[in-house]
Amino acid sequence: MAKGCLSLKSTGEIKRYNLQMQILGLLYHEQQTKASWLSKALNLSLPTIRNILDSLMETNLVVVKGNAKSKGGRIPLVYQLNPDAFGVVAIEIGHYFSKLVLMNCHNQEVSEVVQIQTNIDDPALEAKLFETYRGVQLFPGHEKIKIVGVGISMPGLVDAENGINYTVKEAALQNMAKRFAKVFDQPIVVENDARMQALGELLFGKAKNAQNALVVNWSWGLGLGIIHDGLIYSGSMGFAGEFSHIRMVGEGELCECGKIGCLQTIASLRYLLKIAREAIGEGVVSQLTRQFKDDPESLDPSDIVTCAMKGDELSLMLLRRVSENLAWGLSILIQLYNPELILIKGPLTVAGQHITIPLSLALNQYCLNEIVGRVAIDVAGNDDDMGLKGVAAMVFKKQFSCL
Image (cartoon, rainbow, N blue to C red; front, side, top):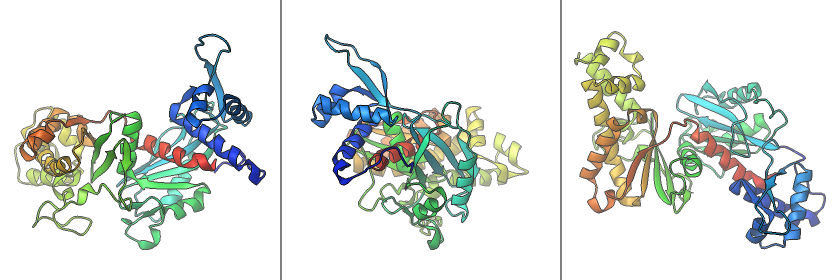
């Protein structure tokens, strides 16, 4: 946490401090607004609000954006958070790679996004990411920005309150908050990656203003972020959204979680590559076989999508198969949650109609018409860093009370 942004000299300043935090939080949410709006929102007199805003400007946390339109009398000022005053480190840990970026309080990237090869079971995870952070180059003009927290999203059973990821194989390495706090010396916030991607979509993407939606990260696993009544739903212990590990096949294959027949074993990218390599090994006539018969292990999901876009029958069949299997799992969620929107994210979404059409057809088969007919199925935009934006927003909202 950056020291010196705000300080308490006596217990008598606590009330004023709390008001400062509330104003900072409202400015973060609204991006920019007038003192009169803050006065109404906090039920405080306009002179009191202006006095606090003046003190926040003295500490360089708030700046005047410009003048608002006036209906006569004093021209009102428009206030906003100073974009160069403070920022956070946003980290997204994947199954094979992790990304890190610095973001300011306007949800803008103020550094490059750096990707490194590591995962949640890497015993040197925190050291690698700290060294990455130390080497990050800030964009010109942002050199004085103060870092006030570190947000980390990752796959697995994440206890966000205590910063523990129970999916990490070695128990001694599960407390991610403690591990990262030792190297970063900053407040650490840990969350599930699918929930942070859903938060990013809710605040900045295609799920913006959605009240009840499901955001599915279709990748090596099947991450699920649940938006309920306009908020991210975490469940009683923070483990809501374990979509990958719904048992679908009674005599199916062993999943990495140790159970048999999970949805992940029939609908993930791992499964897609498995059945593609089996077809190549059997010599099925295909562009995939011609390209990868000598080295099927080098096959990547993007290769299947590329061939499907060129009309390759095997590739189209493979995408249809995993799409129908995903729809089988989604049909359960649709009839349980009755969402208005299902947003699909992940590497396969670039295939467009080659996944959305089989998905929709299968859902019509599996679901009650009255329910599925009112669900919009869409793919997320091209912003691969939406999860990082969600992480940054999470940290800002949690840390205003500790600035």
